[in-house]
Image (spheres, one colour):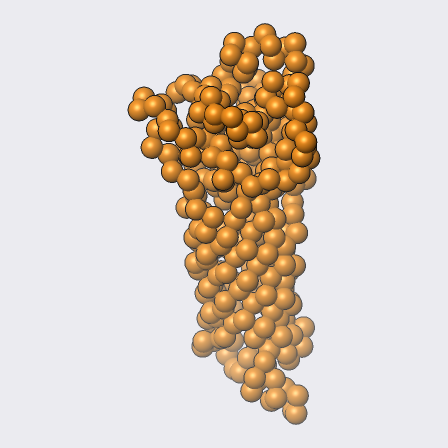
Length: 295
């Protein structure tokens, strides 16, 4: 069987509207496409390999409620954002809840199913360059461009951090990661050789850096003369005037942009997740097709 899917991706992580594991901003739903090859084993079981390409997005400024003192105000002032283009290869097994008693071309009209598997994906979080440096005055010549965040080490991954720094020992995250896909779906028989299915699944990740956010802020001087790394690590000043920035101790708003155990940038205890909602059209190949064609 070969299938073509149209998907919707939703991100759950540190840049979600609220600090709960299943908080997401539906307005950031992004499209994806997928291609699947699968083979049926017995009356219930299918094993398939898939490729998917799509984008995840998140933004504190657009998702957080600045009037919510418990949750949204911190996130709004943190002002981080990202996009991440995902390329995923997966192997997924599914089990039909309604058994096919005869050949597949005479299969049941519809069946719900469960699926789970393993995947490997390439990701590369990016963000747009702000208009000004952290000082709020000096302009960037490439403002608005999308830049890769991993090489900048926004949480001190490439810096020589002091031994007593909260993020001491932090390592650069890998752009190739693994995940566990699982979910539910329903498949409908259109004719002898075509099925249409709809499914909702989650990708449980082993990284917290799908959004480039996980641990604490670091002091901006660890970035040396790299003004872009400073601006991408700490973006709160974009919300304030140069006069307000000059009044901040050390040039950063208290609670943000400086090394402290209380200055959280993200929550490393919760790994990121993304959801995939799919509509798939499947075409049945091989001997089954020929039997159907010449009946």
